[in-house]
Image (tube, rainbow, N blue to C red; front, side, top):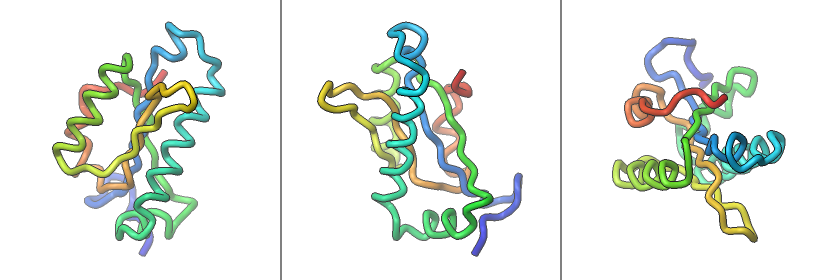
Length: 126
């Protein structure tokens, strides 16, 4: 079954939340930060590969929808991860090794209306 059209109930979205301070304050190269987001998104899909929403999301590769949001710092990212865990929202907190630095997190694909309210305070990554 393909993902439903834009704006339709049940539209599957994979949210990725990246620490914006990595680029703007800590001067990480943009490519390195994008790599972190790719790692987290891939890991979240891998960990939940058999989940019905993930299967549906992957069934129409040309229509996958991702939203990349920015968290201001490590504390905000960690707080979000804790909140998602408490709400039962499956996600992967990506921790860059060997530095042991939390850099971003990615949710497994979810219907947008299910998880978007939990992410409202985060803006699009710039």
